[in-house]
Length: 296
Length: 126
Picture 1 (cartoon, each protein chain N blue to C red):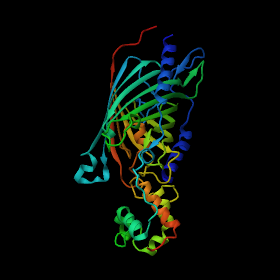
Picture 2: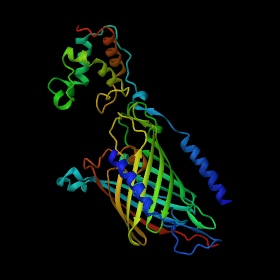
Picture 3: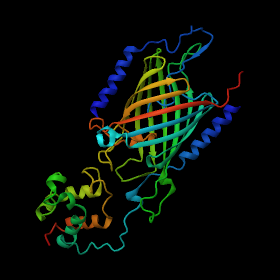
């Protein structure tokens, strides 16, 4: 835990050294125009969690994500590649400031849906805005068979909700950082000692190496874990690369979390980096343009 | 106009989604059935030993404690008396002691109150 906190502090502190105030602007800043910063991140996800990026209106994104087994499961399981957790989703940009998506993962056989609103966009020129801010709300439904069908089971027990505020800033062309205060609500938890509400702070960043390749890191710090929960949970840390090839974005990374939805990776990451419970994972994003926005 | 309609419907959707928040946990939602809870005839040999045997000895017997039970023995009378307060805290999941049984739900409420009763009777070896 301490190690992770130190790492997070290190990332934040060193970020300041690179910070330069020419965010996203190769074009000259004319005073009567607003120059919005674009491409703060390559994709709508940093690695596990949402990034500030949205889809443009009319774009449909088909995402295929995998998390394999743990590296320390040994050569017999081909270092985890024999097992696979899958998440498929379809996401769509409705307007310039709103996108939505639905998905299904085999982690707890979960269906999930989310909406992401842009509230502020980083800009220079006639309106100077230092950060971009978006809000993500999502709901997930676990569809596992009830462990005990004889007791009175409630539909509400399957549901969990997430609210996140994404605050991101692009420092120059190559560095972007994001802070993500997050709230996860589980309607049903196992014991009285498990909090129904989980609060956490996510920190994510991207360093762009070339036009095609960038490095990503993402960490969520759980603010209110109780000492004795029904399972020992760790903070999720993910490190990887983005490879961008026109219509496709590939994200290849290592992470200690198994799930690909916020409820799972924030609150139910049972693997520990220090114990070697590290999983290889990838996201593939294929964007289809269904219609071009009206030219005005 | 389109923007206003979208924002309003977005807010309504959010209200609908978050209005169905519950704060349930399985322990409180599904308490074990205990219509016939006998807390009058609680004895060490007839009540407490079977309880410990059912829930604790897989890790905390004299033979398993060293390897699985963090060296906490709950088999002999003297050991149970010495650890009684800790057992009470662990099985009630109060947060001050590691909750037991490990990775399982709480004991049936009846057996917890039987354990309380045995302590309040003076932890007799009967």
